[in-house]
Length: 300
Image (cartoon, rainbow, N blue to C red; front, top):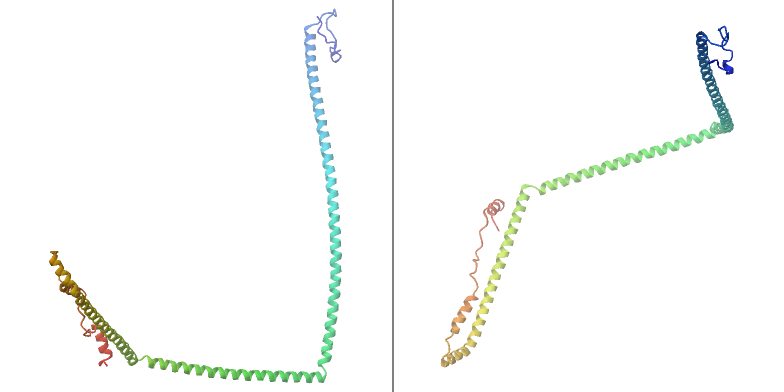
């Protein structure tokens, strides 16, 4: 059986193709050589496939990097264009601002020049006005007038100070007189007399109240006596009818009743006024007596 491959990749791999003499059988050495070459061819095929795969991957990565670089380059170009436009806008704004500032600076410089010229003209006018003799005389008169006003104000100030000092002295004298009057009105003698007058007034009020109480007691007693007299008169007037009724009752055998004289005595005793209080003047308390004796030795 022949083991020589008929594929184009393995055609003519054996060199020489056989070593036998008859040309129909293969030896072991030829087979080993063929097998070794076949393994080398298989390994070469695998190596070529892996190499091709790596080349394809490398090409893909290159294409990817190229596309990414192109995108980044486009983005960079767009960003540069945007930055350039923004820089241009800022430059235009700065140019406008600079022109405005320069215009304002020129206007202010012109205004300052005009004001300096006006002040110079005003100073020249003042110099021409106050350097002549009439202006100098006018200034002297004004200074003299101002001096007179100042002197008058100083005189008024001194006059006002004198008035204030006199008023202060008058107020001080009045306060001293008031102090002396208060001291005179608050001496021990005045205080003792005031206490004495107060105690006497209280005793007078107490005496008046006792006199009024005595009058009220007398009036009540007189009214009670008048009432008893009137009651006795009424009892005497009605005693005849009572006696008649009592006699009639005895005749008829009725119960015995209480005598009218006993009823009158009981009514008069029940309506009798209580014992009147003594009209003697009560003695003063020890404290008031001691204070009165110390304040007023002899009572009016």
